[in-house]
Image (cartoon, rainbow, N blue to C red; front, side):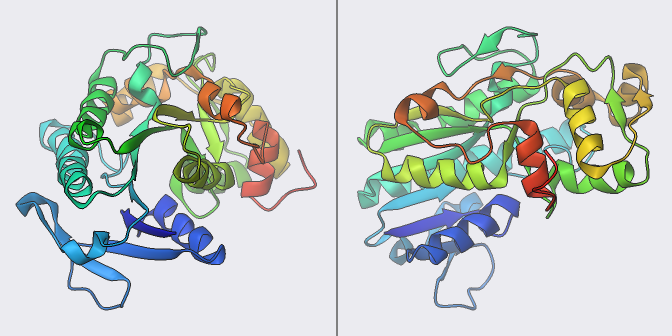
Length: 301
């Protein structure tokens, strides 16, 4: 296949490029600077400008664009950046895919589409959008794929959980703290912490590209949901460190603000119904297996 990727320099994009090339596929990367490699094509989403050569002969486009949700404390300007970095590129790519006749678009989204009010109730892809900034962001992000959907492009909405990787992301931030014995649950620990291993995140994307039966939303989450307390115990066990501490909810709200309320102190108990029914073979079925693989501790699960 020829797969075009937007957002190829991020944590997930880098792993996806490597996996596709390892399997013998051609990868074209969309970049916002001057291209300096044969596989790079310039685009400028703010100007709706995309080098049309990038999509020639493409079998699929994968859009992973978006500023980091937890990179900065949220304020009005950063929340607008979070929206602009997702919705504008998605709209540009959806129109370009429709015009070029690319058969498949896999577009990133987030499992916080369901909001934080689901509590312990299990949610799958049939659940409605929740409330709050993140849920609204995900809903509008997905809606920006409408030009592709209207053109008959098979469009997959990848509602990803926290992706576990030693190379960065949440696990990259937590590992040093836990290694020093400073780990602990967040708030009361009863909130769910949706997760997926990097291997299964990449596997789910490739599966969605190649499986014609999949369209619409898919929950890219591990098949066994865990609470924050369970996640905390599993990570401490893998790293052979105690996890005695508790970070109170009020402290998280004071330190991090609205992001803590929406993404840390609340989380959906989401399950991957579409992937499982389509026959996707998860490499990591449990949080222990996913953490062990991510941290290179396969013998400890």
